[in-house]
Length: 314
Image (tube, rainbow, N blue to C red; front, top):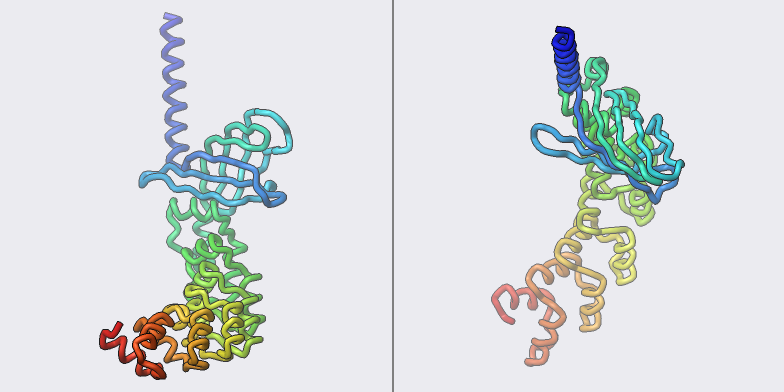
């Protein structure tokens, strides 16, 4: 009887623990983590792999070592570890092992129950469990939300806050752009600037070259590789202060300093920008011109050359 009562007691304890575990799992997300050395001083490469209902998602970047409370990476050898990462959106409880500063393990994410309401009070809604997890990973804090809201940006919502953290759009970046005379306030374009590499230094260089680029011009220039350095090469070939739209067309169609220099050697000293673009569109190459001359067709104008190619003359 005593043994039977003891067995019943263990079954009840196990059932209670199972209920607690299931309840905790319902309120938390779990996954795995990995940590490696970083080339950047004071940081480590840290990855979080979330095992969700719709598959796995991975976030990996350099994190400051101060982020990990309870983790000392200076100790040599292999050992078990338990540490936490605390964000406004929630807390990551991590356990596993490290070996000479590198390791792996599992985590449980405990969402902060007040975070969604706090963000909603700032004007940022639509935060479900998955989004709150992402906001914790990217450290979208209430202070960051307040800072971005103070920038008076259009199109700023919860998703943009996350994108800002992913692509490192912050107050410092926005202030640097505005100090160069660009009154940017579009959230989407700020993200596009970061994605394509539009910087305050680029804007300054263009201003020094006499240009006043619009936001869309800057994005298009970066997409197509119309850099200040490339513009200086064109200047050396006699193409100073070409319209920004034409510069972008140059890059799209392959008008390069090398192409211009070959034309100059053939006697075409300074074709108009639109002529250069037309030549590239229709395949009027230095080789094509040399071939025509070898067949006795000398002193053709650029318009004549383009017309010949349009009509299929090789």
